[in-house]
Image (tube, rainbow, N blue to C red; front, side, top):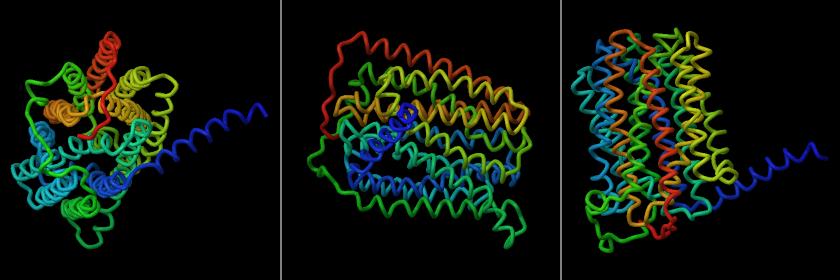
Length: 423
């Protein structure tokens, strides 16, 4: 009887978790459906895009500059996209975001020119910035306090799941296309065309999102973005800069690390990427449970301090098996801590400041990635595959330290419960 108690607790927790999911409203479900199609497209891009770029003769340092174009665009577009979401409403903002992103993805693989590819990446980055800046307050507005952590965790889980499916497709789709075209760069190009079409298809479900606030009722102001920015936003954005750098130093180049440094095949890497979903799913499910047991601050801090161990494992790896363990560890701890961190940031931001907070989180996260991509591109051009992971470990440690300092600062002030009104 006693031995069955732990299992009973697990089943009760899972039952409660799925009960929360059933409470999600129609808008959240439509948004998740659009995210599924877009996520599959991103997974295909994640496995094949770098290989396509190198296959047409572009050098690694130029690839680093191309991969920095999208993040820089995310940073530039964050505040304008925030205005777009406030002014036009969530529905049409999402339609425009996915339409422009899909067209930009198609444009990137319509040419072998590094300048044209970088331009397409920049335009696509401008659009996809909205998937975060508009998506964050959208999820916060369309969820109550009780299920908000679950909404953000499921969003993170769906991203991992669909990216994994896309990665699996990206690993094997060129093999299918090889029956029709012999040139490997054309195989990659056609696989990426499929991804662009999937992103365009994301516009269909989000077009049915119901508008809760009429355009003429909205009062859009620069104040919360600039001169009215508060200490909570500044500190959150500062942490996000190092989160972006930690990820940007390694994740955009992970396929090159496995294939050219560890000796993996494209198919094996695609499978490794796909199987990541097992661990990120567990992380997304365990996260809200940790919050209930440890509280926000401790749950987030646990994930933050585990990340450096994973990145250091990657830095020291000399085999596909060791690299896989490090990569799965990184994705697990990142998914758990980041989904909880974003839910905390949105839940504790003032109601009218939610879009501004998400915009500044977007700016600093992608700015960190953009700078990091240039650094790693230069290191890979010098055939140095280990140093990006060493640098990523250092920025992960800084992130963990700043996170602890942030929560100490929060604890030193009397908490003020944010209003639950929508943005």
